[in-house]
Length: 227
Image 1 (tube, rainbow, N blue to C red):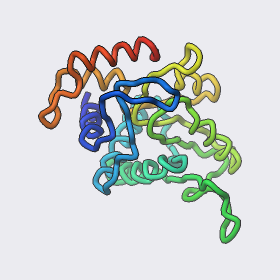
Image 2 (cartoon, helix red, strand yellow):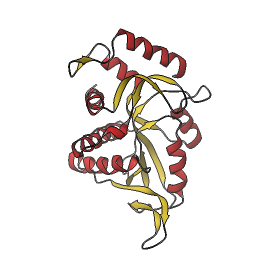
Image 3 (cartoon, helix red, strand yellow):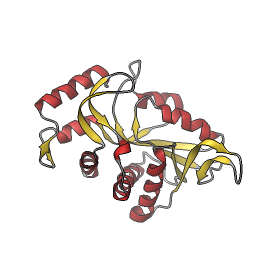
Image 4 (cartoon, rainbow, N blue to C red):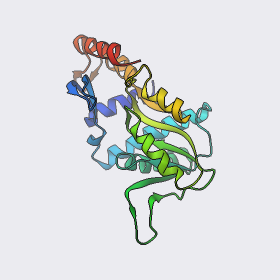
């Protein structure tokens, strides 16, 4: 698993991945929860960027993400620190200069104006959207019109931290819906299944986070809501 296992342990240590009884926005009862808002320090956001960069470079080497990406687009607000830290990590650790940009929630009507901060999107630019966790794909649906209002850019993919593998209202997952609707592939650092496979029976910080009981709950959740 390499960096994937390190990322899972990192999420646990940062308090971004927890297990228990939670209710999602959709009203589903879930035995695990991912809160990327729990990354609070410079060291944590720097490490987060390195994991995103590893995922991007790995998929570029495999030909799944096109080389020559002009910039990372981070949807406001959670995508902003991800885009910045990943851009830094790509430069410092992989020798790849990739810009970053993000949207303002409200257009600026003075100074230079506009809704985009950072890289100025141009016709033909290859962009990667970076987000935290995908559920219904709302961030992508909101980001694409913003990007396209600037120029005729091309979206090379969506990079996320965790694929929860959940179905929407139908039989398709959010990732499948995004692919079918926009032609955009999604690249998660890890999937919910990989989290279970790596943490089941394993100790982190002297604790076993996924014991037999928790694993049973996770499997039932997968059976009910995932694909």
